[in-house]
Structure formats: C-alpha cells, structure tokens
Length: 215
Image 1 (spheres, one colour):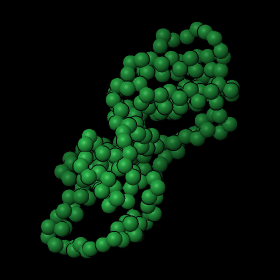
Image 2 (cartoon, rainbow, N blue to C red; image 1 turned 60 degrees about the vertical axis):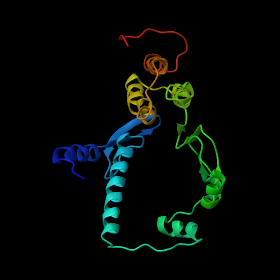
Image 3 (cartoon, helix red, strand yellow; image 1 turned 120 degrees about the vertical axis):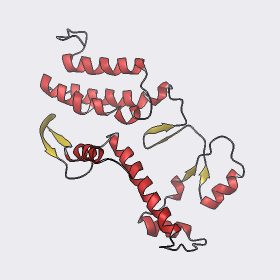
Image 4 (tube, helix red, strand yellow; image 1 turned 30 degrees about the horizontal axis):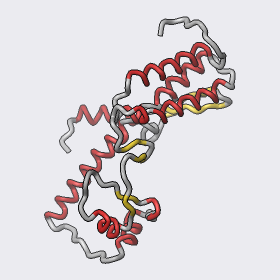
C-alpha cells in the first residue's frame, strides 16, 4: 500500500513488544510477552484493521477488473451464503438498520435485508453512536467503570506500588478507546484525575488526606 520501511518497522515494534500482566490475590505479578495481537482496547488495533481492509478491497477490485474470479447469483439464499462464507450464523433478532436523516423506502429496504429499523442514538461495541461529541453521557460509562473498579480495589489492602501499577495499567486504559474517537471534556478529565489521585494516596481510606506529591 506504499508505506515506507521505517513506518513498517514502527508498527512491527508496537506489535512485538506488547507486555501483559495478571493479578494474583489482587497484586500484579510479572509481565509476559504476546506472540501475536495487541492489548485489548489498544487504539492501534482498529486503525490496522482499516488499513488491512482497504488493502484487501483494492486487491479484490483488481482481481474483478482482470476477471481472475467470477461472481455468482445467490437468489433468496443470501443469509445461508453469508453464514457459509463467514462461518458465522446471522442473528436476525439483533440485526438492525439505522438510517441517517431521511432515507426513502426505508421499510422496503429493511424487508429486503431481513432486519428492523431503529433510530439514533444507540450503543455499538460500547461506543455511543449518534451522540454529540461533547455530550456528557458518552463518558458516563467510563466514569461508572472506573468507580466500580476502585470500589473492588478499596476493599483490599494494596501497597502504594501496587496501586500505581493498577492506575497505569487498568484505569488509564479504560477511556483510551473512547478518546480515540471523541475529545474528552475537561470536567470529565478532572473527575478521572481526582478518582485516580485519591486512590493512589488514600487507598481504601475515607475522607480527606494529604498528597505527598503535587498532582
């Protein structure tokens, strides 16, 4: 696709140097490398998928233009053909069509595609679709997940070093996926910082306390 050798080495380095750690009795133990793939929630993953998809699409177009492969009629068995091709069974009960603005004959299109018509906003793969990029509800789920994680950790005695590792490896990764698509509002950033700061210095203790380092 025309990418330079230096860029390819950068991407290869990002993939081959991924490290994982697991919690044993609430404490992170060691790190081990990944033979393939990226860490869950890594913003690099969807970008690489899009690049691979674009390259595959270009290859298919060239193949069709040169008549190296031929298509065939599928008639009314489109569902069965899709299942055989993807090795996945389509769940028609969860298949929906979301029109953007006004779409003529939308109901007829839904009948052809064997799906129902729904409206925005909605949630897909944990991401709010159709919401304003500054809408506060986009970040409600991130704040809720952060508070739930902290509630579990506060019930345990975790050392200062352990809390620091949990903040860097877990809490910092929670908003990464959403931040790759939406700018984080300052008030949400301040609240996340406050939650992480209080957990680092106070652990499971309630009330105000002193911070040994300016945050």
